[in-house]
Length: 287
Image 1 (cartoon, rainbow, N blue to C red):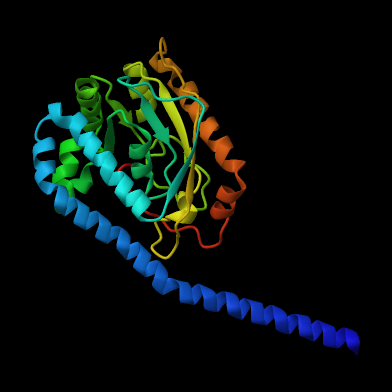
Image 2: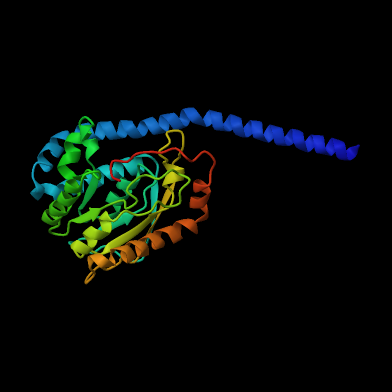
């Protein structure tokens, strides 16, 4: 009899705990919506304030270094304004006026802003051509991003020509090598060839970066996230001096393995990855 009462009591407590958890989850939604809306308010107001400067600084490539300084200030306003902080582990530091190929994993809308904050050296991003159609954003996007239509061979060839022209005076390239934003139940999507062929072509060191916390803190899902610490691991750079195109696959595998091993051995990241209902797809302008 006592055993039966104890069992019913435990069952009752368990039901209460589940109910409290569901209630807390429901009560959190309004605050989450306000917080998420604040992000878009920050973006719109800061971009509107910057428009006069953007018109001048994106009119000519010679202003790009000044443009980059302004973009870094903007990225910091957005990042820290959302209540985020950075914890960086750097095995090797970026040298001034040297070109690099930045290759991080991509799980969050905040990833490009993190990359911008991490590098004082100007970075040129390679992104999708279709995002030119977005009002206002598209106007400036096409001026500062090397656009690629991945369905067109001619477009991919032009990327090489444009990159060669712009890789001067320490300007670097930033590419999310997965080529997409993978569903959140994927640890790391297979890497595309683009970043590695460009790195070999221009003999640029690859900077493997691992972003651990984007899925949890600022998911592409509007109903997920909260302020917190973004942990970043910047690996030792992979030199490409003397490499040829036949080395592309081994270079790609080396970079992939560095990033993948960090992610799969991180308990927080894997907990985020293994959450239920993580199959929804999202799109990013820079993948």
